[in-house]
Image (tube, rainbow, N blue to C red; front, side):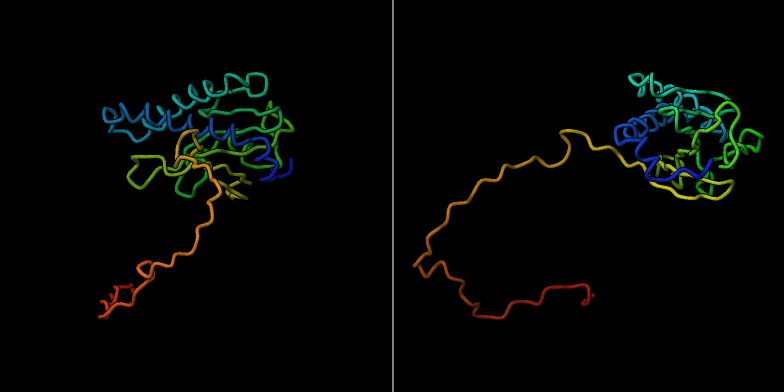
Length: 205
C-alpha cells in the first residue's frame, strides 16, 4: 500500500472522532494516575495500565459507531479499523516520538507501508501516540502520524476539543446610534501642564 496521505486520514478521522480519541486518552491517564503511586518500581507498569484503560475508553467513546469502527486487541497493541479503510494502532511514544515497540514480525509489518499486516490486507496504516511530559506526570501531546519503518513521514496533533459553553460569552452586536458632536469644551482633551514620566519598555530594562 502507498503511504497514507494526511488529507485522506483527516477526512476519516473527523474532528468528532478526534475529540473521542482525545477524551479516551485523557480518561485513561486519569484512571492510571489515581493508582500509579502504588506501582512505582517498574516503569512498564504505567504503560500496561494505560493500555488496558485506553482500550476500555476507546470502546466507550466509539460505541455509537459499531458498524463503522471495530477493535482488534493483539500483540500488546490497541488496533482500530475505521470505515474499513484505515488501520490505526495506539501506542506510547518513544524518545523519537514514534510508537514504542518490541521488534516482532507484526510490528515490522505494521511499520513498513508497502507490506500488509496479516488479516488487514489493503488497509492504510497509521499510529496515534501519546507523549508524556518531562516528569511523566501528564500527557503533553497526542499525535497522529504516518511512518515508514523507523521514519516519520508526516504528523499532526490532536488538540483538546472545544466544548460548548466554554470560553467567553457571545455578546450580540447592535448598531450604535450616532452621537451629536458636543460643544462642551470640557469634553476636549487638554494638554498636560507638566511632562509625564517615561513609560518603562523592554528597551529600558
